[in-house]
Image (cartoon, rainbow, N blue to C red; front, side, top):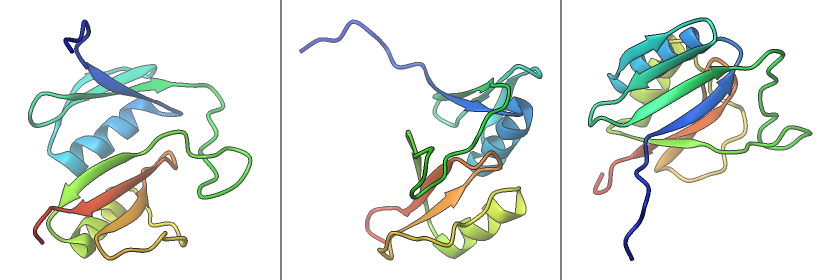
Length: 124
């Protein structure tokens, strides 16, 4: 089947778009390509984009349970889970206490509280 649309980007609501753009650029080696108080963008290696939209009174998800459930999450391949976790915490992210199991991935959060996963590349 042939599609009629081309994927452009994922948009993430957050309280401070420039801060979150800087975090994801540092995480992925991407480049902040747009940066205002209301919106920001990161172009990832390979050309895909993550956009950040400012939302007044943004409340982070209460993952893994609670009144504001996770609505999405991003996955990233890494070569070493411990090094990835250390890098994420160094650039402003965190590791939630609850980890759903498995030794091939780890749940982390960005500075706005959005959960995402770092996953070992296949074959490791």
